[in-house]
Amino acid sequence: MSIILNIIYSFIYLSFLFFIVWGYGSLLKSQFKKELNFGETGIYGFVIIYLISVIIHFFSPINYLVGLLIKSIGLLIGLKNFSLIKKIDSKLFSKFIGVFIIFFICSLTDKVHDDFYWYHLPTINYIHDYKIIFGIASLNDQLGYGQGYFYLSSLFIDPIVKFNFIYHPSIIVMSFFIIFMIEENSKKKIIENRILFYFFISIILIKFTRFKEYGLDVFAFCIIGMVSHYLISFYKTKDQIYFNKSLLLIIFGFFIKQYIIITIFYLIYYFYKLRLKIFLFLKDRLILFLCMSVVIVSISKNMIQTGCLVYPIPLTCISSNYVDWSLGNEVANKRFDHLKAYSKGIKMYAKEVKNENLKAEEYLNNFKYSFHKKLILDKGEVEKIYIVLFLAFVLKIIFIISTKAKTFSHYSKKDLIVLILTSSVTLIYWLWEAPSMRFGGYFFIIFFIFVLIFVIPLQKNYYMLTFKKFNILIFCLIGLFVYKNIFRIVDEIKININFPKHELVQIKYQLSNKFIIPIKISNHEYFCGNIRKLCSPNANKNSVMKLEEKNEYYFIYPNKLDHIKKIDRELSDIMYSINKFSPMYEQK
Image (tube, rainbow, N blue to C red; front, side, top):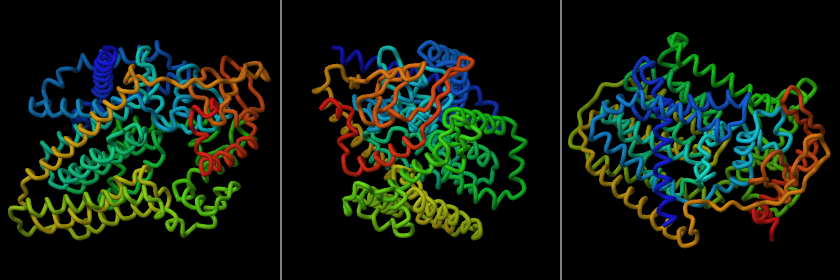
């Protein structure tokens, strides 16, 4: 019975959160030069919530009470603007409900992301327990990653389901993204965007069955998908509003997951077509205000927490000679190289050399131009690319057999060449800088293939298409998606009588009274997990030089050498002792 009640409560709470996010977005709906549709309204609601949460965190922790206040205001705004929902066509609205239910089923799990105990939960606990701390990254540099997603997650914590909903911003944004494309395709009839929709929804249904395996990346994929959709809409209509919206989403997305900045290359086509008209963006006061607000609020938060505008990008870090609590570019360089090496195949190289003293910078120097030789040895990554290629082949076959007739169409060869160049440059940069499918690779590869095999022929000829066979494919994939999730849910219920609640692993700690404010030193080498208040992983036990309180704010100053040693040791353990990254490791 408790399982049924938990599932019912989860459905009600997720519906409640869905409506709250839409409520905040409805503040912007009529303010745009062209009104947002229902899905867009929800996605832009996250921008407003992010700004509110970060600003409040400068002065207060985002605890249950503050979270309840923010959610209550969103609910009231949504109720006030409920008439906007009543205007939606009933057939369209029934599709929206279907999308929400499908992704709700996907959300039912008691599993958590691999990084949950590592830095996801500690970051959310920090936001929940404290107002902003100067130099919080001195405890553990991963607390300074600056991923704005955790500010959204902190609002989703609930006294009943606890941390079960911290990944649900991804479920909600995924639902809004699919709803956005359904509504756009029903109104604007741009064939290219409709096929792009089939491409995107197909890969989502095939690969994102267990969405918590991707966690924050799902949110990022949806932003990339939105920007891709806007680019095709601009290609067909030349309406500058798509540039304005894209710029806002790229800026917002960058502070959610940094690799979203790769989509900035999509702006090549906008600059080519708009040229000096691009500066008309400055006249769109709402977009300009939102862009500036996101940038100012985000870099201020990052500077306070790490001493860097965007950690761990070394060029953005201020020396500790000027900002006492700064990690500096030494630590940032070490972490940046670590992340880059991991995305460029160091895992496969480590299996060959079996060198526990392997350094990220050593690998990056030795394979500066040839790291792809190591990447192709990763069967998991190669398999994902094969899936995208196979999906493209299937969609192309359906496209061919669904064509009733075609006639020659006049088009601009120059425009088409620049669009191809735009998608090519974006893909090449991703392949060079962050060639991992989880870093947006799915959507960057899909967009490039889509331009080559669909956009090009659709410009040369006007096609009369029927979409019945495309819809059959989607219905089949939905059936497979639901089937896989139901069987997964049944298996998880057999193990956990409190499903879908996740039973937290409790990690022990020792209390250090070295400073006037005690720090809890985790018994786990790398995880603080659910240890509340100030906590350092055991590998960072000497990472703090000084801790003091000024004007009711905590200031923590780092021992940089200790951070550098920890990052090197962490890389070695990821390569050769991955069992250390289980939250149960210290209890074995």
